[in-house]
Image (tube, rainbow, N blue to C red; front, side, top):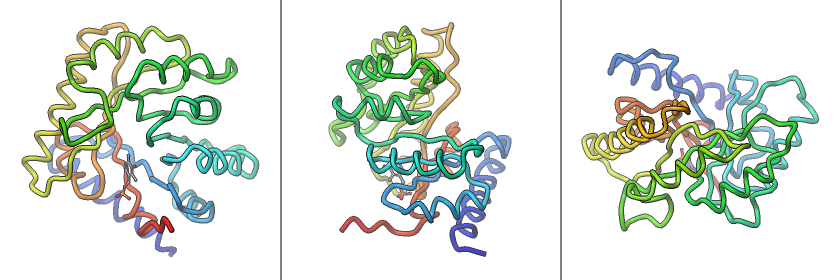
Length: 235
Ligand SMILES: *Cc1c(COP(=O)(O)O)cnc(C)c1O
């Protein structure tokens, strides 16, 4: 058994246990395998273990991997999630190749993604990245600007607003983790009341160290890299 296969089995079991602890269905949380910096061969191992959803942070690297699998495994229903910071001059390849974007935090980016989404593809699934840690974070929309941004994005034709994402400040204790995630879940519920015509069904929150709290607060996608693929080497 490859170690990637073992790691996916272990993480899947942890997700299941986190669900059981708080009384959620064990299939209500999706594992997003974050494959940034990792080679195609690592993704191939994960696919062989049954993994289908992958997260990438760098546009060109992600597009290269997507094109590789479109060419070599055209019948596999893989889903590709862009989760990194977005520069406005890089929106086109994201709109043309990815299925989901988790890191939208301004209207300009959203308008470009909608304009550049090809007509033959389904709408691009969008999560708004929310800054749940105040001054400590530069990325993510602030809670008080979320409603206006969501309302604008909900009106764009080639995007489907699905929910919220956050990368909270690191906290080691469960209660601080839980309160940051609960704040995001409540923000989604409030938005849903304001936007009854769309369905906000997704909360992308939780990584290796805080998955249990994220699941307890209602996460539907946990993003896991190192625990599946091993440490990243950026050199
Ligand atoms: C890299 C990354 C992850 C995965 O981090 P690991 O610590 O490797 O599990 C999750 N979410 C985002 C937004 C990331 O950039």
